[in-house]
Structure formats: C-alpha cells, structure tokens
Length: 531
Image 1 (cartoon, helix red, strand yellow):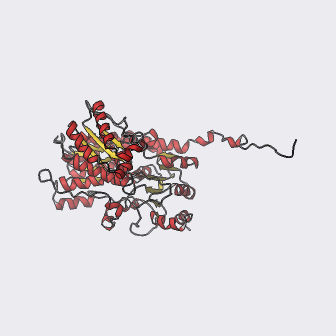
Image 2 (cartoon, rainbow, N blue to C red; image 1 turned 45 degrees about the vertical axis):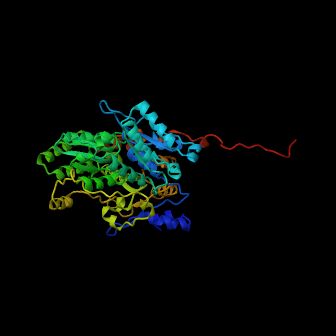
Image 3 (cartoon, rainbow, N blue to C red; image 1 turned 60 degrees about the vertical axis):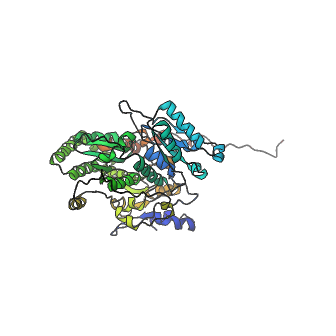
C-alpha cells in the first residue's frame, strides 16, 4: 500500500469516493495524470480554502491602495478586510493609501430583515466625507446576495452623486466553490470598469504590466527594482502596491507578465482579446526562475541591446548574492519540503527550493483548477459545471481603436516554440515519481502527510501552520511570509534561504521543558470510607 492509499484508507467510503481523485501519487509513466480540482469541499472537512468574497476582496481588489474598499456585510466578514495578508503599499507622491483602514457596513439583523442599501449609502457618504477618495469599491458578503441588495445600483448612484468611480462586486461568499470564483468576479469588474479608461502613454521604450503580484513582504517592489534596472517601464501592478489610477492605463503596456496564474489569468486573456496584449507566464521566486523570466521577457522583444542589458543586470545581481546562496545551499542540501498554497505560489516556491537543494515531495493548491496542475492545454477538456456557470463569463471583442498586435501569426508561432507566451505548463510536470499532489487538502490529510513523508519543513497558511508546528515540523507561512520577506528575485532568495535555515536548524523545542516532564499534571484525593 503506497502513501496515497494509506492516507485515503482512513476515510469512510463516501468521503473516500470524493477525495480519491483529488490526491495523486505520481508514477514514472509518460504524460501528465488527471486530477480533480475546483469542486466543492466535502461538508465537515476542515478545508484550508477561503470563500468567494475572500478571493475578490482579500486577494485581488483589497491591495489597491488608492480606493476605499467597503465590505458590505456583517462585521465578522470584515476578517478579510484587514490584516490577513501582508500586501505592502506605499502612497505615491501626492497620492492616497487606504490600505491601513478597514471599511465595513457592519450589517445587523435588522438590516438583513429590512435591507442594507441605506446603510451602504450612508457608509459611502461617510467615506467620501472623511477620506475624499477618487475611487470606491463595494464587496458583497453572503447576506447581501440572499436579501437582494443591489450594490451595482448603489455604486452607480454614488458615481453620479459624488463624481467618483464606484464599482460594486457581487462576490458573495457562497458563490463558486472557493476564493477562485472571487478572483474571476474581481477580474471581470476591473475589466468592465477600470482597465482602458486612462490615456497616459508609457514613458519607456518597452512597457510592462505585472499581473498576479500582490507585494507580499515587498516581493513586488523587488521585482520592479530589477525590471527597472534593465530599463522596463512598469505601467501597473495587479494589484500589490497597485492603484486604480495606474490600472486605468494598463491597456497601453506592451506585454503582460503573469505571476499568479489562477488569480489573474482572466484579465490576461481578456486584455489579449480586447487590446491584443500578449501575456507571458513568469516566475520571480527563485534565482534560476528569475533569470529565466528576465531572459524570456527580453527574447519576446528581441532587442539585442535589451538582451545585453538583461545579461549585465543578471551578472551583477548574481555576483552580489553568490556567496550567501552557496552558504545556505550547503546547510540545506538534501532537505525535503511540503508546500500548500493557492494559485501558482506552490509551484513558484518549488523553483526556489530546488535552487537551494531542497526537494519538494508534497505539493498542492487550495483553490486551483486543473490547468494550474496539468497545464493550459487541458482547458478544452474541462467541463463547465453548475458552479462555474454561476460566475459571469464576459464576451470580449477587439477594441476598434486600441487593439494592436506586435507580431504576425508566423512570428508568434515561432515565439511560442521558445517562450511561455499565452501558456502555462502547470505544476505536475515539475514533480517526480513518488511525489504526492493534493488538491484542496485538509487538516486530517496534513497530519497524515507529516507522518508518512516526514518532511524537514512545511510551507502553508495560517489555518494549518500550528498543526504542523505542534507536530514538531518547522512551518512557515507562504501566504504572509511570517512577517519576513521579500522572497522574490535575487536578494529575496537569500532572505528565504536565511529564514528557512533558521527554521530547520534552530532547535527551539529543545530549549523548553514541557510541564508534564517536570511536574504531575493530574491531582487526586482519597474519598469515602473515612470519618
């Protein structure tokens, strides 16, 4: 019985039937095996997923710094309004930054009975009176959809009344099977109301958007630093340290770079259809991956001077970190890791771990679709189900004035032979025989995987971090970096190597004596039979 069979063997037959196709143990056979993904979680299982609202507000819309994002719902849903992710942001000169604030309508029982639109209008007025924002976004939570509040009508009214841009998102938590649905809804809203509304032209010869970069721990700032050293003009970032003001001009960029595939591929595809903007899958997590991405971008433009400048910057950055990387590599070589995160992040960090000699033996995503595991070639085979139909699919036509193509079909065909243009191979092809891949994993499976595989370190999120830690396995949050970072690019690789070396080699548990080792934990007394 292999590890997968032993892990699934603990389930009752009904749960086994659901979970068996979400868990793969890779075999040394040709082709990429099929995995079940983007389906509803078994009720009662402690999943690590978030809801649709978490995807819209918590991931995509929330990091925009120059707009007030109002959570329309009970204050409990405001958990995702503030403090759950470390989306660093700094106001531009003379600009606004509302990231440190939490805006919620704090719906009560009476609002749910009689409707919450009046309260939402009052919240918008209050935000306008106090903060004077140019942009407001409204994110709905479950009760809003159930009682029928029309956030879109309220948004239109606010635009007329206050002369601002106001966008409503029907991202109620119950829509879809996970936060993935919220990404799609957020992308649709940005495409319909924001992208393409600006007219500022790029200042540089080659301009880029960075899509799916949320500036956790400052990752986005590190990526921008490297790209600007080479000479690129960064038009906008979706959406870490991003702004509505910048995203309005995103259609003017020459190329879209896609970091997190799952959260933002919709925008990349829609911009390709409407404006002709190609997108390139990149990864700036890992030294080797960063070098490859930088070379791929330069190859796309095909400018000899740009390629030469790229090589100069790579050589300079490598020289600065080479000694540190070798030191940590010697400390970490031969270690084994497990990693669970959302979107492409689990795949991204495998590249960095490989640079350091750490083998990723367990991996999976919380809310991925099959193409995130198996690659985009599988998309035509994915059948649309009722949950998928619940999310609007926009019909995008080419803009008659703004659509442009850089290359002919023949040139694009040749580029696709060399570069990941409009494509993504997925995570599974980078894993080896015997490794295990788990979609939508849960706490029970976490404990089983720790016992069966005994990884030296495990990367995951806040919901399961301390389960792992209590089992004696070092754990680091890959969603928020445990208040560390940045981990992207060249310097980020050294930060990551230092942090995980500390986690693995510092014997924290050996420095404490558990109380049951030094004093009795039970007390008793004799009773009965006496005077």
